[in-house]
Image (cartoon, rainbow, N blue to C red; front, side, top):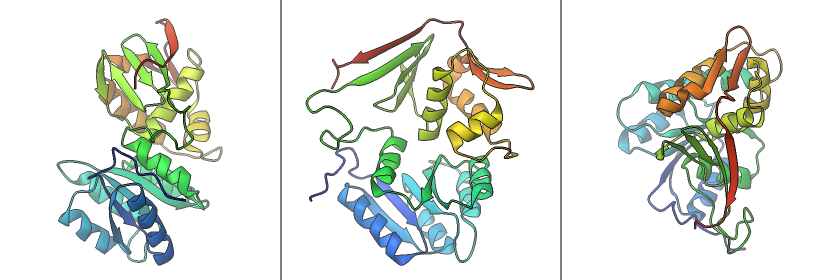
Length: 255
């Protein structure tokens, strides 16, 4: 079956940092088939050299590398200046603490091995703020459906993975979209940090981390005047305010 390229992926560059040759080649093949430019690295040192040679838009980062942990690569990327790539961690099921550290260092999302290639392509596409092309099974052919939610100055277009504040687009990660979606689903109700870690991040109960607090701080910085919608309930957790009327529509008028 011929693979369909994402029409918005042309010139987008992905760096695959993975020490398993077969998996690295498989990831590279599928990303190239989707229209991305792909570079590969089998070690942390090689990844740092690739990052110096050319700025990727997305880094798929294995956390278990032969010469240094992926969290160190994440730290070095986020400590740099200039354009910052999206970082999607590739983790094994038993590496929860590494995911925690990765998020606290600024990773955007993670995928747990073994993963489906379809899931990974969705995560990469969503992280870049684009929809998959028509015909991939994500929407009805011939209709550009949009599930839109508005709350005060904030508007979220879930299907297009776009967030707007007072009409201006704000770029957020796939993880932030899941976070906002969960809070909207439970609007007005306090969600504890443990609940958010379990339902949004996928961590097991009892994980001790400041991941949620760090993420909320960064998200508030991006949301500007809409940051007041994310309320902190001291000693309890977070909630999305119910001070504004929530409107939800399925808009099929835009393509």
